[in-house]
Length: 395
Image (cartoon, rainbow, N blue to C red; front, top):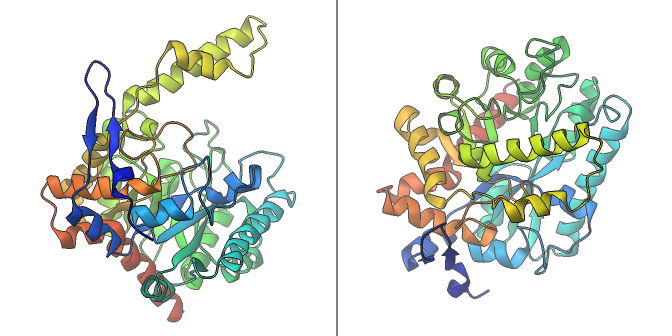
């Protein structure tokens, strides 16, 4: 497919300033296209489960489809098997059922367009499919609730192609406390969660520390015999008080573990102003509810019209990458965009999967070498994944 470079030029509108253009250089586009590009968190499975779209072709909505992925050089997305953290799902078979349905959906994509997509279960699959000019579909499970307290289910989902598990999501579950949940039932990991970490190591399942509480994070660090990932997290340095992101002490522990933090592009993960905007919106909703006002389905849109959302910028995303590199080194950072998972909150310059060359251009402009950029795009994640595979082979 021809590269549509004109479409990679993104209009940047900054309040009070004229629009500027980001046009990645030919070198940035070529480097992106010639490199395995792993994004460890894209929410296509739940998106097309909720509202069907054929992502093997161009789609009207969403952040991912085949033409845009090819344009952006994305050839190895981890598709998120996302399970909502509803209490009625936990331990009642619904999580297990939904996870299997979402995996079915990913297999259907590969079966429907075998010339374009292939399921990837291993690092060797990723490398071979890159040579074959196919987009690899790797899978990670966001929220461990489908395990339902049974190690047999862990093996079941591994056999179905899941290669990482985000232990919890927005509520604590039977495995771990969540960073979002004020209830800290387990003071970190549950007894089952601690056993699960060991078994995940043994079978080669990557442990994802995104979403879990700080206590749970440090317990994972103490227990895991293999490097971990933070599949779609950013830095608390730029969002003070936001436990969902990682602080410097956690980054240092991640380096000691040998893991990787994959930076989330969502504006509310990148800047405090975006985070505060959501807090203010929620405060308005709570106040209206207390007054007995029934919220209209257009409430959010009306609030946004009166209070424009402060989108983060490409430069601010790059700041997160810079800080990881400056603090712990180039070997511990990757990409976990959260495309199709953060709604209309993506940064200016990184609006969908066609825009990775903009990120690469930004890295080049900041002095990153080609070899360093390749580590960020995939090298670091492949290293961690390979370590997990090797440990499993020995146990």
